[in-house]
Amino acid sequence: MASTDKQSSKDMDRWLGDGGMPIIGLVGGALVAYGVDGEDLGWVSGTFVPTDIACNPHGITQAGVHSLLLDACMNFAINAALPGRARTRGTLEMKTECMRPAMKGDTFALRGEAVRVARQVAYGEATVHAADGALVSRATGTFLLHRPEPDPPAASTAPAT
Image 1 (cartoon, one colour):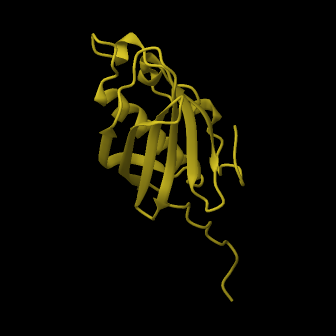
Image 2 (tube, one colour):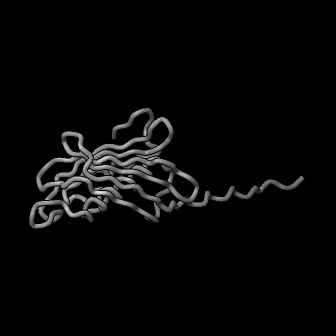
Image 3 (cartoon, one colour):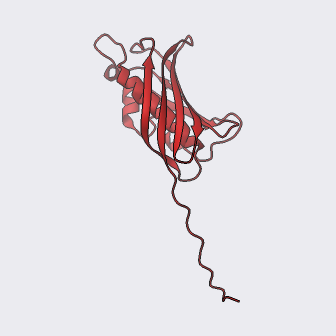
């Protein structure tokens, strides 16, 4: 696990690679590092080498594949920042923009970041960049959070005075 200023509040190493979703690996994506920045906001980085299954017959990655990877990056980044058993519950809204084609076999960099984490929702951003640094696609999203209720304090057995 990599980090900038501070380690993630939870160990998510088992989710590196395909993020726990085999489809990410099938399309050529891999999550490789994550952490929490100095503002307690999570991030994740990864790679993307489009496979046949990710592309149309002309070797261009389908827009839905971009959305899949960008959604996974934002979710992972937000989860990295959440304490304990808190987690994202679902994507409420997401906008994806594709600016350049991602060709089969080329290597791209993935990056997801938590932008703001509130009590019930969180906001994320994610990008796909080409090897030369050109922005290929980006997304923003709003995510519903699940925060388990804390266990109630144990009842005292001491007699009342």
